[in-house]
Length: 115
Length: 110
Image (cartoon, rainbow over all chains, first blue to last red; front, side, top):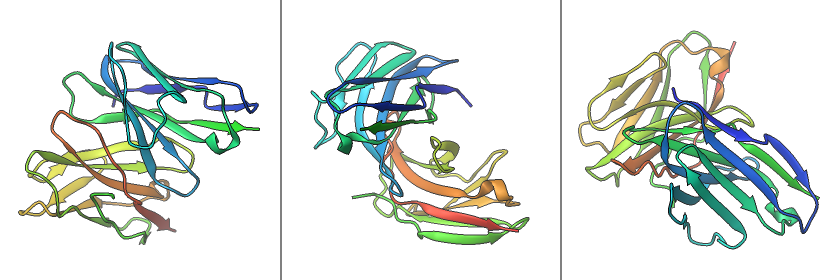
């Protein structure tokens, strides 16, 4: 299957700071990428859909000014958590789809801890 | 609300077939059925997907009922490494926007 890589895999940041998470498709071009968050022992919750070169579409209840998504190229999408608070601590996961594919491939996830 | 329902947990003896059911009674005609699994603290791993025909790959088989309202993922010879949470999802053709329910925690027992 296709490879999607996230960086960093773990990050600890202080309250009030911002942190950027990268999602890269390593061996294919991804026209669409998705961002999810997952709380302990819970399922994945879709946060937003990003298409290369256009603004992201956020799910209801997700603050777009807090979770900034940029999809500037066909192989890279970034999620920036701005003014992070402890309640933003979570597991963030991205997925990407190929232009003519039929399945989405997931990154390994990023564990964010805000202290 | 999730569009799929799955049993919260299942056990399977190592070497035996694991049959994981999923109900997707509101599935639309243009929606695929997808199966992923997630091992603790990792991103979900793609397993298999199908539209209406049964599918098989190197990892598993997918059996979709004729009315498409339910499906079963079959791991033919479960190993300890297959212990994971298995998610069934649906998404429209060309959408890939997967929503996940609570999944089934499969425990493969030696």
